[in-house]
Amino acid sequence: MTGLLIFFCILLIGIVVVQLGRLTELAVRIRGEGAAQLAANDFNARFGLFFMVVFLVGCFLSSIYYKNSILGYGPHAAASEHGVWLDDAFHLTLLVTGVVFFATQIALFWFAYKYRGRENRVAFFQPHDTRLEIIWTAIPALTMFYLVADGLVTWNKAMADVPETAVIGQDYMEIEATAYQFAWDIRYPGPDGVLGAKNFRRITGTNPLGQEWEDIENLDDQHVTEIVLPVGKPVRVRITAKDVLHNFYLPHFRVKMDAVPGIPTYFVFTPTTTTEEYRERLGALDRDGEPLYPEWYDPYDPAEPDGLKRYEAFNYELACAELCGKGHYSMKRTVRIVSQEEYDDWIAQQPSYYLQSVRGTDADPFKDKLLDFEIKDRKAEFNDNFNKALSSDVDKIIRLKYVNFQTGSANLTSLSRYELDNVVAAMNKYPNLTLEVGGHTDSTGDAAKNLSLSDARANAVKDYLTSKGANADRLSALGYGQDRPIDTNDTPEGRAQNRRTELRILTQ
Image 1 (cartoon, rainbow, N blue to C red):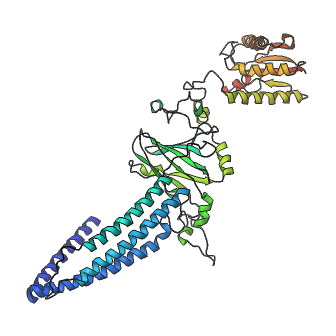
Image 2: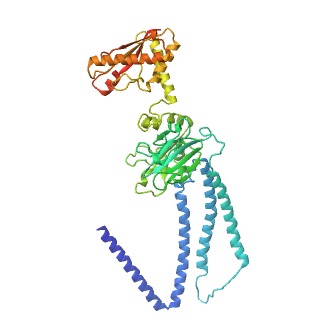
Image 3: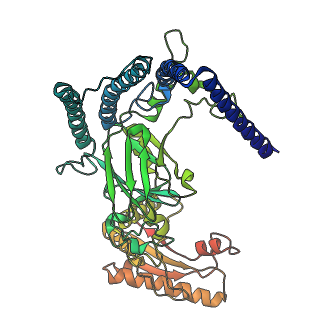
């Protein structure tokens, strides 16, 4: 029905246009072609002046009306250091071109009115005026030269890379943004401040960026779901894409750089306004306590008129500024700018992707060894448990949670040696210490066999300790089999807890 109404409306408009044309032809015949032409000249000239006034006033008023929604005006001053330079360059260009635009439009319509065709008026032809040509060539050329020179200076400052003498992690930080249809993979460098190497040929479902795990700088890298940056700290963003052309666009920071498959790009910027400070700017009040920007006091969610206002829910955002496919809209990411203290707290909570998703799997090149920080952490954990056992009057047992055996045997796994070396170090520190090594199993299988297996495992631990220099007279080994469970044997987790090796302090 709607389509039919639209069709009839278009048909009616066509009929009206045709009839107006016929009336015009009839008027020409009645008044004569000369008189009709002069009347048309007067009408078009006056209508042109009217259109000029409406058009230019509309341009001016619309810019005033929308100024609080345009980047660089109202509350939307740049939130980055280089953004101020870019805004200044745009403002200068707008001033010059705006003056020229208004002047040329006024001259165009005024000349059309003043020199309209009139009776007995004859055109004057001036084929050449050297002085006039010099003027209208020199003035635009000098103006353009200044604008281009100023723009090049601003461009070189805004697009500069970090200085060669700058120290990563100290003078600036580096993150990586990888675009794909239709999202972003954001990678932070972890505590070492350095992003590890990657190779697109190694991209898999569990390695979305193709990181080379042999590179130890990858081991602490973090994959995050939002971009959080400290205010006042220069940030170098590595930008790339997996599939098609995307664009890394942070409008409030005046950051915009293509993400090109196979050609890494970068952008360096320094945030100068935290998210909270920008919200305060949007929610500013005048001297009378009225909002300076009333539109930002509208409900963020129209369905919840008493909920957050727009300025309270504001967030910086990362967007893709290329039409990368039908899911293009979903590439929006939240960006938060916070104080250095808030950033430090946030980044400390972000886990290493390697430790969370790769460690101990078949993709882990260090599967059969401990890394330096793991050795350090496990040693600290053992010493803490050992000291608690020493100071306890009742429970003088230390569970060796990192001592494990091959399934169904008394053969120690290769990683068990790190925990057992901690035991040797403790025995060397306390020369009067005597220990009992206790072996325990779950209730799976025959009880007698479990008892024998636990005894063999306890002796295997004792043999390792003595081979590393521990005095055999200060050690005893005993298997308890399945008789002393510390958890249920009805679940896999409980049985894993019951399969354990413990040290009991006999004397100290």
